[in-house]
Amino acid sequence: MYIKRSVKKHLDYLSRHFPAVVITGARQTGKSTLVKEFAAEKGRLSYVTLDYPFLRNLARTDPEIFLQQYKPPVIIDEIQYAPELLPYIKIAIDENRSNGMYYLTGSQMFRLMKDVSESLAGRVGIIQLYGLSRAEILPGEEEPFLPSSTLLSKSEETITSVFDKIYRGSMPLMVVDKSLTPDAFFAEYVQTYIERDIRELMEIKNERKFLQFLSCVAVRTGQELNLSDIAKDVGIDSKTADSWISLLVTSGLVFLLQPYSGNTIKRIVKRPKLYLMDTGLACYLGLWNNPRALEVSAVAGNFFETYVVSEIIKTYTNSGIDVRSRFSYYRDNNGKEIDLIIEENGVLYPIEIKKSANPGKDALKNFSVLSSLNKTIGNGAVMCLSSFPIPLDSGNMQLPLSVL
Image 1 (tube, rainbow, N blue to C red):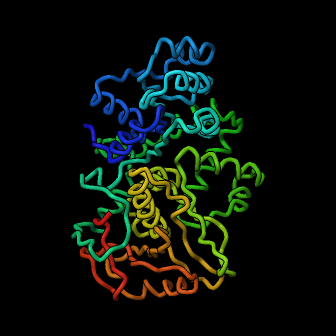
Image 2 (image 1 turned 90 degrees about the horizontal axis):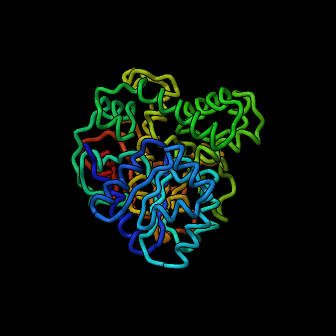
Image 3 (image 1 turned 45 degrees about the vertical axis):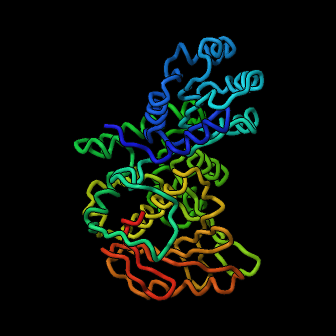
């Protein structure tokens, strides 16, 4: 069963404005399916995957012949296996420039994105694809989320249904095939990631240490990133830990939410917060094999926050909007924290996330710290397990997850 992806509209837009489009994201997020459906709709795109060793070798050793054989418009799947193609794609574009010539997908872009930026600058549109969003699963219309008093959606969600979703995650196969267990899916997923991305592309020799690092990162989802602590737990140096976390970010497995910064802020925490973009993977790596146990655990709030933040991120990336400069969080040395701040057109929208059905006005208590920032403060929201949107005061709402 194919689930229509919200990002397809943006893919169509990029194909009409750029000669090349790169679709990147973690494994199993649906990149190949997306471009195949797009090709079927357009009816004129050919498709080739570098998963096949013979084609991969041809692309690496004789990229010019490869591109003569697979002429545009063409989808080249798993482009990370043959970065040698990129300079020749640039030449082909410059010789006969038209939009929608090349569609390139890749699941491990740690090194490749540098080559893409250098070889295809001004010629390429980039899509970051994550797992399925709530709007895609339901399905429903999706647009970038901002707190608003006009969000009137009723929610049938319970804490049980939410943690069932958290436990399974958002990978398309895990959403579609209810009989597939997380243990079976993610065991193969992690093994493939280690063997095909880490071993082949990143040349990381100590795979056991890397898997241990991945697990240590997963159990810290929704928390501040302390690389020194992680490095100590794994038994690696800080330089290696920094390199490995960058790898996870670039591959789309991890998102780092930066702290809000401004000239008027003096006593603010400077570490980013860490979120795994698929909560199912975080559960598997954290050895959670029962959603009910996770639901009542000490880390339940962190996983709920991870789920909400990742869903909000997807409402933006599915519209082709890079959230890295728009999203931040606030925490100062006095312990005052705002889980998420979205900045749009010079306006700050504060968001608090609570694993509660009725957190009430007390959840707004830290929003007042923003008044010293010389910025316009927009509507705020408390994202929670309530059934209805509830006004908390003149500018802030208590919102159910159904608004996402």
